[in-house]
Length: 335
Image 1 (cartoon, helix red, strand yellow):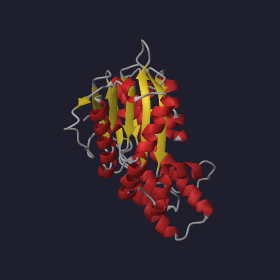
Image 2 (tube, rainbow, N blue to C red):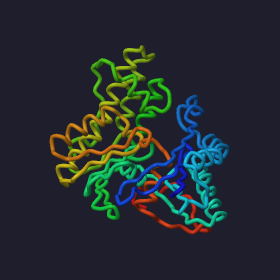
Image 3 (spheres, rainbow, N blue to C red):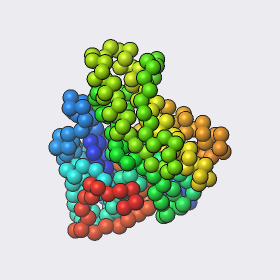
Image 4 (cartoon, helix red, strand yellow):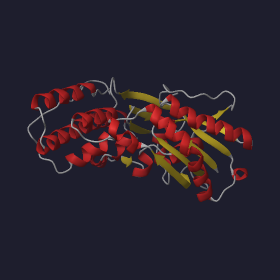
């Protein structure tokens, strides 16, 4: 059994997980998440100091609830795992220092987990994807296209050159007067919207590589909103629909190119933006046409959560020294 802790951004999570008997999948015994997202709505995005203070307030009770739900005491644990990056420094400190203290006091192994790797490895919760595979990790801070040759060998195919897809959603939502988190708000408003004849750019579309870009799309939307003045509901919905389609098209085009170029056994979606219905639908259609299995975690395991941190600790364990582990806000997916 492993106790896993997540505190990289605005969520505070604790989970108890274990490896499935005789298999490569991961079983979740308990998974508790406390979010401060509502606190950030009035700011239109995450305020790091607000997030860290709230995490400091709730992390003890979140861990206690996860342990109680699992029916365990610390002596029953094999290790304590924690996401040490990437993320917000203040938030990371809360989780890392808590995990180090618990590991030291209870004399347990400390496992350091890369938050972005954990997003991909959430696909192994109650499942066993076949490798090699193409992984698309899409979140508020990252957009990465990854080749997974095996569980231990990962290689970069491409990623965003500027804004992450989730960041683009958040900034576009703010421009449209929609609440945070932006991806959820834009998808909700766009679902039944009609086109208003606006075509936003899809930067790097048709390019030779696997890289993506979203800053140009965001800037084009800002100009469109400014030119229209006060938006009515029809304009707001139509622009939200176009933003949703533009972001998804960019992600789908590069993923399809990777599938055709690399011939994987599976495609793995991950990250908060992987909850997007249009993205799931379009990637699934391509995978069905090309005879490739598509995997995507349950919605509750797409957004930040501790169960995925536990999955990464089970599948790619990395032991750390309780006196030497420090947060790494700039850690990349291959770190």
